[in-house]
Image: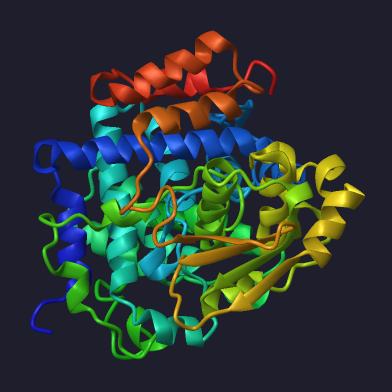
Length: 452
């Protein structure tokens, strides 16, 4: 290409102004922030959270940065732990074109630097928009099928770019420094699907956040790095991780069409690829009133990718496999008529009746005609009838978005275990008027848990 796309993207990230961001995009960034905070507060219930917390506290002994729903750690430790908290219980966002969770990489380092430097809410909002857009744009430039075919996992590969962009914007980088930060971010790009089925896939997110933070802080010291990392012929991201990619997609309509609006949210815990199945199940439960004692069998049809990832957990072991299990999600919704973290506590997912139903009465099939998160559910009833539901776009997808009220309800649900009622309402008020906030320290002060 005639233009160096790395430098074009860096110029966008370094020069974006508040007034250049459409109001709807600013409001969606607030939605993404609030959802990430809800997920982080819920993340204290994650099975491995205490292990990551111990690791993060060992990175450094200073305590200048706030933990969402917790206390303080070092700048690096807080970035790492907050990133893990957002993704710990498997209900954060996803950019489906690149199958990448974005907020766990972008939000934590931005919040940490904004808190450290007492930056106003308007600056934080711009940094979040820049970081989210950078991540999704870098993802668009991949040939995702080639990228995935080589086994790579997006959060740890493309997430560091967005984290570096958000931090660099808060630090006032010039375009050349931002491009160098991207070179340093790309030099840390890593993470593959060899980790699938283990909590390590969630570690990719928080490591991506830390990598982006380090990239920006090193670039701030004028450390020399390539400013064409995305398309460098020898070792560039698109040539090494893909098949040359589609670099033109990175900058096409940049600043005019906002790719971050394609980031999907999740109303329910469970893997993002089975949110369509969950949406269809709730239609059957709520509109068709199917019940366990009236149901002989559930047949679930998923596209090939979803089936390959989530069709093999009929007999799940532990919370994380339950969160990945199509069988369990369907059985839990049918029996409990809800799906929250309460369904992913050992007392519930180990219940013999529920586990037996998931293993013996839920059948998951591959339907190649379905794509992405599309799903079909058929329920055979004891009366001999078959009732079905189909989902084209799950709740939370860009085509079927969550409302601010639904995100606020999600926040209230998971914040109450870590924050007082007054603090919960304060966070909601601050985020809704983020551009009026004098200092990000005020937000982080309220987010630290009295019970942390």
